[in-house]
Amino acid sequence: MISRLLLRRHTVLPGFGLALGMAVAYLCLIVLVPLSAAFLKTATMTWPAFWDTVTAPRVLASFKLTFLASLAGAATNAVFGLIVAWVLVRYEFPFKRVVDAMVDLPFALPTAVAGITLATIYSQQGWLGQWLPFQVAFTPLGIFVALTFIGLPFVVRTVQPVLEDLSRELEEVAATLGASRLQTLGRIILPLLGPALLTGFALAFARALGEYGSVIFIAGNMPMISEITALLIVIKLEQYDYAGATAIAVVMLLMSFMLLLAINAAQAWARRRQGGL
Amino acid sequence: MPRSSELALPASPAPVTPAGTAAAAPRPPAPVTGEPAWVRRLLIGLALGFMALFLFVPLAAVFHEALKKGVDVYLAAITEPDALAALRLTLISAAICVPLNLAFGVAAAWAIAKFDFRGRNLLLTLIDLPFSVSPVIAGLIYVLVFGLQGWLGPWLQAHDIKIIFAVPGIVLATTFVTFPFIARELIPLMQAQGVEQEEAARVLGASGWQILWRVTLPNVRWALLYGVILCNARAFGEFGAVSVVSGHIRGMTNTLPLHVEILYNEYQGAAAFAVASLLAGLALVTLVLKYIVEQRLQQANPAPR
Image (cartoon, chains in turn blue, orange):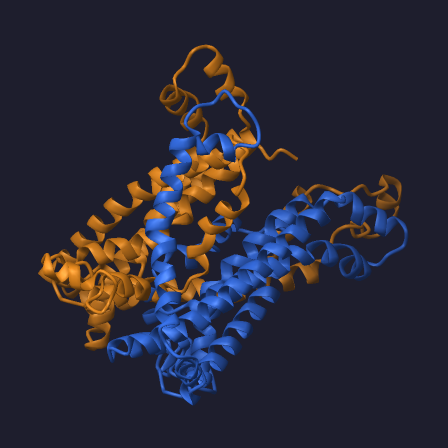
C-alpha cells in the first residue's frame, strides 16, 4: 500500500488513502495539470522567439509599470496598514468594530465593482478627483490607487494578530529602564513586528502583480504608458497569439513563485522570532 | 470624536501608574506604554482618513451612482433579462464550485491535519498556489487545455463539447481561483485540535465516516462556514479568470461582474452601478457573516496562547 509507505507514524485513524487520494487527484486536475500547460506551451517555442516576446518594448514597459505600481501600492499599505492595525489594537474610538470589519472589504468586493467605482470617484468630475490638482484616473497614478485598494487588508491582517499578542510587559520594562516612547517603538515594537510587516507587504505586492479587474477600468490602458502585464496577456489572447500570451504568463508565474518562496521564508523567520519570546 | 476616544482610553489594558504621584501631580502622568493624546488623535485620524479615501468613499459611491437616476432606472437595470441571466449563471457557477472546493478542503484537511506523511509540506504549499497566480493566467491555462488550439481542443470539438466560451469553462476558472479558501481555513484548526478525540471515537468502535460526521466536522463547523463564506464571495465576484474563458456572450456566458463591465463600457453608468450595487451588497453581507463567524470561532477556539 502506498499510504503505508508515505505515513511516518502508525495511526488507528482510517481514511488516509482515500482523503489524500481525493485531495491529490483534485489538486492535479484543477491546478497542476492546467498550470503545466502554460510551461509546456512555452517549451514548444524556440528560445529566441520566447526572448523576443518577453523583451519587446511594450512588454518590458508593462513589466516595469506593474512592478513599480505594485511596489508603491504595497509600500503605502505597509505604512498605513501598520497605522490602521496599531489604532485598531491599541486605541478605542467610535464605530471601531465597524471599521475593523470594513478592513476586509477589498477581499469581499468584486474587483470589477472596485474598478468602476475607483475610476468614477477619482475621475476629474468625481467625488475625490475634483479636489485633486492632478489627474489620477486614466494615468499610472490610477493603477497605484487600485493596487493600494486591493492590497489594504493584507498588511493590517498580518500585523494585527502579532500586535495583539505583543506583551505589554516588554514595553513597560523598556519604559522602566528609561527608554522614551519613541525609543521603545523603534527598538522594541517595530523589530518585533518586522517579520509580520514584511509578510503583509509581500502578500500585498504579490496580489498586486497579478491584479486585473480593479486596474483596467482606472488605468486608461495606453500601450507603453498605463498598460499592465495582465492586460497585455488578455490583449495577446484576443489576437489569438496564444504563444505570446503564454510566454508573458510564464514570466509572471515565475516571478510570483519566487515571491511565494520569499513569503514562506519570511513567515518561517517570523515563527522563529515569535518562538524566541 | 476626539473627546470620546480620550474618555474611552483607560479601557485598554491599564498600565501601572504609581497612585501617589498621580494624585499629587496636577495632571496624571501619561501611562508608560501609551502615547500622548495628540499622537493618539493624529494616528486615529490618519488611519480613518486613509480608510475613508480607499474604502468608505468608494463604497458609498457605488450606491450613490446606482440610485443617481432614480429607483425606476435601478430596478429596470437589475430586472432586465440579461442581468437576470448573468445572476443565474453566477449562482450556478458558485453552486458548483463551492461544494467541490468544500469536499476537497475536508479531504485535504483530513489527510494533512490528522496524519504525518512524507510530502505534507509540499502539499500544503501547492494548495496555496492558486493565490499566487494572476486570475488572468488562471483563465489562460484553461484556454490552453480546453481551447480550440489547446490539448483537448480537437477532441472536444469532434465530440461537440464546449468548455471554453461556455459555462463549464466559467465554472472551472472560478473553481481554480477559489481553490484554497476552505482548505486553508480547516487545516490549521484541525491541526491544532489534534487527533485525540478521533482516536477515542475509533477505539470506541466508530467507523471513519462516523468519526468525520460526529466528531471532526462538528468541531470545525465555524471554520468550515468561514471558508465557505470567503469561497462564495470570491466565486460571485471573480472577474479576470472568468473574463478570459467566458467569451462575453450576453445572456449566455455572462456572469454578474462581466455584465457590470459590459454596461460600464457601453456608458450605461447607472445600470452598471445598479448591478454593481447587488455585488457590493453581497460583499457587505459577507463582511457581516464573516464578523459573526469570527466571534464564534474565537469563542469556540480561544487562542492557545
